[in-house]
Image (cartoon, rainbow, N blue to C red):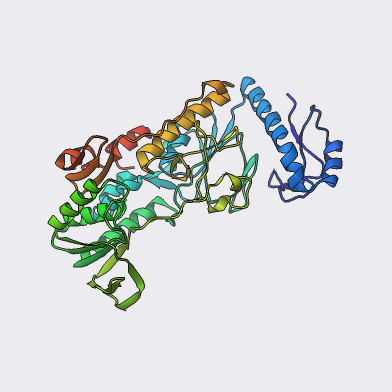
Length: 428
């Protein structure tokens, strides 16, 4: 089979083309786009104009070549950037159907909604923090942040270059996390010690993270003074007003002080344990936890070929098949997509499974059989300690032990582990 060729002007970096070369021209051996004419045209146009003209042709040629390789039995290379709840599930699902490479800055993934339980009960983290190699038995793992993406390669921050046939972006939120699983487990131990030794605790942020942490602490340490400060007019603003008011009632019944329409400036302190709110209220707390929104993990895509695929909020625009708009072989899943639905783990996992199915169809050359992703709203549940929860359904809003039985006891950790092919109860 005739292979892919690059023109003579390219330079090589670790087996990959130097994409900064202004005269770089990509061509396919045996096609009408000969290197000579490519070189001639590149002297007449600047690089941006040249690539704008010939990029669609190159993508189509590359697309046909991948189909030929699939027919001949060569496994397609699927590169997944981001090993969170969506990227890890997609990589696990694809590992027997393709040559899967997972790129992630850490050696593990953690079930994100279990984080707050892990802080009050560190032993819970043994099941909620999972090493990538535990489920990715047939794929490859590269532990490094991704730094750049091109039409055929992903570059990592440690200067590795990984070619791909299909690309999946699943970088979620921009978080700073320890490199190893052992370090992450120790971090939960440290957070627990901070909670254990404090008699008063300040939580900043009244979204699902702040509310769930307040609920966990109030349930496990009822003797501690907990204050929750939220900058908005009500808690859980992504839910309806009934859910907000019911949650406020539950927290106050557990002796949690809730201050709404206020913020806390951590730089305006009058001592190690004295905080001042925007309404000039003074809060005494031995420690504090920030539970506010985190930025989308898409800044690394700026100044790459995907920068025009980002919307104003930094999310990747995708079509009904979860392909990045304008691309045939690049997908995005999870929080980083612009899919109009709640950015929750259950939907991120659903997206991962649909994208995996669609990549498999493309590998088989059955593009027309790709599945359409349907954004949905089934139920939103916020855990309140170990027994209660608040749930918003299309027809009702519930709070207490009934929705608590759905989520709060195990926080879906067992089900998530099962989906990853692991024992539901065993520690990883």
